[in-house]
Length: 441
View 1 (cartoon, rainbow, N blue to C red):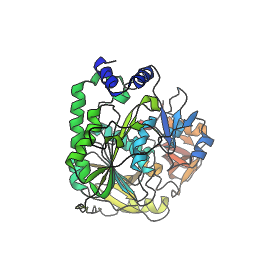
View 2: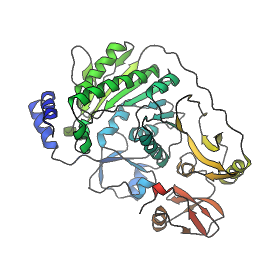
View 3: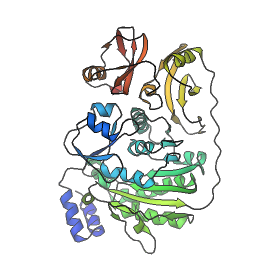
View 4: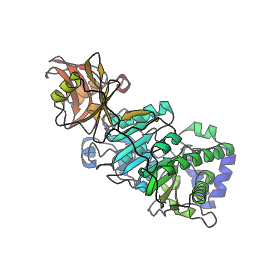
């Protein structure tokens, strides 16, 4: 372990906490998961899957994993019924407290743990805009949004500056889970230790200020901003809270009163102690959370609606045959999107997904997409699905065909009322359409 880092921790903590922290470095990291209540209930989840676990106090539907087993290739994970997440990482969204009808921006979202957690709150007219600036990580974010069946999300691969201009004054809630020096990840990620230096901490602090500046511009009056990191460094945590209060007098720091963690470090007369710190002694690997409210009126930027291309006959024919009820559609460049919201034009931001991609038009033919079948928007509205037993589902996950009698055409493959994907039937054999990246060996 880096001695300069340990010296800083000794300065940050009192003697007993420092010794307790050193002892935690010899222990395995805390592991956890959330049950995805968009697709199942906690009662049904545990009735169907035996995962040794205990409840976490950091968030609703969150649990500690109590074995060394990994669940990344498990069936409930593949079905989108759970998301693996370090327990204290779920704390920031608990403090954000999204409401069912909120517009929420997750500005630094990959791999998607906090975004998928936010989506579980947005059960009314709420809309999630989830962004990742790095393209490869943005694809991981998109994959998790699809797997967990989230339908009311716009996924972007953009810069904070562009999103700030487009979303000015529009957001009820904003989460900045900022890129940081990752001191809370040292047990989990060796690269975080290798990359650590005082210079890296200061560099992260500067980048965080820039991201916070952009995030603040998107808040409406009385909008809530939650800033979080997975580091212990005061420069990236309380010092950034002080910077916000110095530079944005219309933002107030809200005291966080929760039964877990500990108060932040007090700096002069600033209310930096209103923030919350979580250390390994608090049953989490390490997190910092601050909460702000914007008090002044804002100028809201108006968003246009994307103009859809014309509805092709092949799309109309598919929808009439396969989907129950009316669907809001947007067709652009032969891609067909559906959703419960208007399809907002986010201008020069690169949009990876505007709600649900249901398919593509290829040579005047409609080819459905995986998201159509995993989406909670359509799960109960698919006209052609077939239930499979555990052996059939595991075979399907390996990319095999299924021998089952079913009407010809596309068919959703279900296990206990949740689609894992789809296939195409000739009447007796279902050809596997599960994306290759989701198949298991």
